[in-house]
Length: 396
Image 1 (cartoon, rainbow, N blue to C red):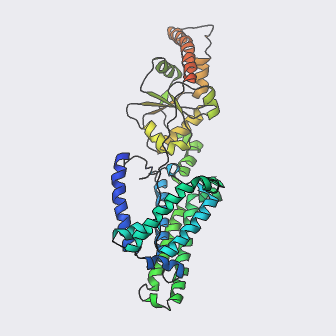
Image 2: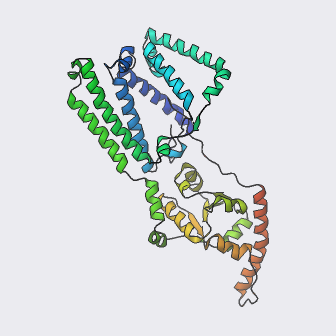
Image 3: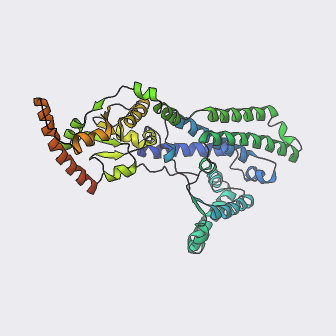
């Protein structure tokens, strides 16, 4: 279904849910009149804009729903599959599909909807679609240059415009409201006012108002990620957070002991992590803490998760974010990697050791400086691969 956080729907259950969603989708299409070619082509002739209204409503609902789910931290937008944009093939393909829509009276999806209730013209349309797919497959080597030309990649509207999800959702809601009003105006003139009795103006005003309010709610809704990051950048918040520390000595001991319950999340820049990383460590950014992969990693039971960074301030920042996201059993390295390097990796035995505890500590650190350095060297040869969830593939 979607990259929900947490995984309330597993991969196996996805297919079952998708089946029922597909049945419901087909039922709604048929009830909306999408199994009738006359209603579908009415969009092009100006006497019936049901297709535009249904698809606009569905798109706006899905768009604003995703914005709300992302705000609540229930979905990872970064894992939603985006079809790659090949500009020229999209323009040519769109023209061919639009032409076929006008001539045949169906699009690929609605043709199956109509065929399911026994429409003969829809069955012929599906047959034509199969022939078209076959011809495209046979001619693909010839069409490859056009098909892959002007590759824009996984581009989205908000990335292209350099704005936020909410602004785009609000803009499309306003666009939908305007389209509803305009198409109503066209219908009244093409049909000489005949549709006014079936669809009172008050109904259209109500729908337009609802769309505007929905769009406005998405626009005004702050991003949970931005809100938490802003809180994590607040010095007072960082200083007020209660931390569970792990000392450099304990971390070194757990590494030397090959503690299987230990996992280290390293928030240093990737360049520093590549040069030198501790065993059992995974690189991560602050923003990645909000994703599905972070939940899978940090929320594992009976695992001791240690946050490390260049200094303790960045570790505290990560801890604030983790606390806001509900992560528990997280500890931070006291003094950061700077302290770990000073106390373990680059340890120099003091000239004077006054107490037995100082002597024991010095003996351990001298041993750890050698063994941990060797572990780091071996870890560089075979680093832990950072597992990433794949984008959810789907679409109509």
